[in-house]
Image (cartoon, rainbow, N blue to C red; front, side, top):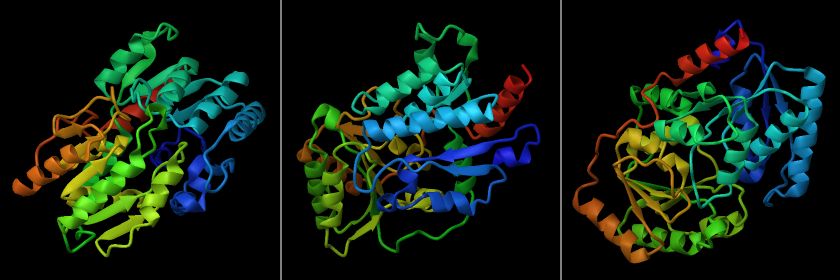
Length: 341
């Protein structure tokens, strides 16, 4: 939306992947409601209730290649590290379109995103990273020849959530609750579904409401969804997708934040509530001091929950590792500079 207020850029927005799937909340509708000035291109590649594979990957590569060839943009701006983002980078690469990558340099050893993220960075000419560690990591990559084109701007989401924190809004639930998000970790062979179910049962036994959001579409997501949909306790609330405002409202008021999602590392610390990262999916990612970590052991998880209850869910200050709220202005300045080169 910031680009809508910037007359120096004409853009088109491409969305794909799980955004277009009913089984993951059809989040494309939320984007449509923003009524952006740029044309919205919806690239339906993924299938319902199925992890994407080579057919979906090739579909996106081909369509992005055709789009870039026909439109001849000055550059394509790619965010993140999902498989569709990597396919987009390859399509742009084969059409000789310059790539600006936002979110490179991070490490999450237990997810396939790690490889996609690294490869997108290798194909990119300009790099906007979210933290100092990511900056240092990219500067070590031999294939990135011009290290002066790597910029630490922080996280866009931090800009929005800091503004959101200032608003007065009612808690989403009248009772105390834990917010839980787990993604598959088949790369490491972790049984996420089992440990998730055990954690849910213990939280419920402590009379804590558990608000659960859906996983991403990585291989193995079906087992996690099965655990989610099999729950019947009145203490459990399920959301396929919360949307930005509702998600931040839940982060703001949650007594506990539990799972293996990158949101526990980027957004959640800014709200100061107790956070537990379980397993090795995010191993290697820069971690705030207020985040606790444990392996796939229910005893360790229960001990941490008990400790937080005994401390009355103590709130702490984070280290602001992903910026202090000026990422979007910094990005716009850099885009204007790149556009004038």
